[in-house]
Image 1 (cartoon, rainbow, N blue to C red):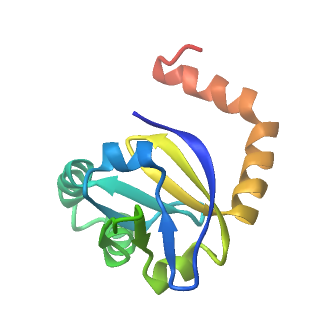
Image 2: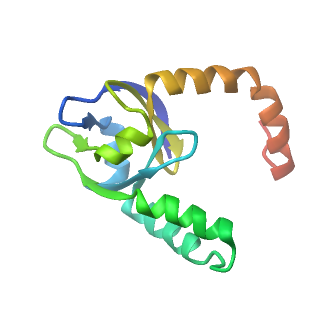
Length: 145
């Protein structure tokens, strides 16, 4: 389980330090891709394979399925950690997520998410205001808090 919130900076070469707790669970390499809500999703190799199988089973005749898999896979990049625990974020992914300098790295269960600080603050504030409503909707999925 990946959880927690960490604030980091991206250096001038486009590298970010991944928290040690996350690196331990992600392994020596990971896959980074475009996420939802203008963040990046980071998966371990094992989690990526599971997700890849599920997405490849989507019906090819459905335009939404084609659009999503194109969006998801075309932005994907394999990354390895250097000796300082940094990963190089490709320019296209940094641009998509509006990552400049300050960012937030969060654990989101089976994946890590990388957010620009501004986008995370905005998203968090908006979600915090509706957290009760969101929790109520999740009760339809047999999740009790």
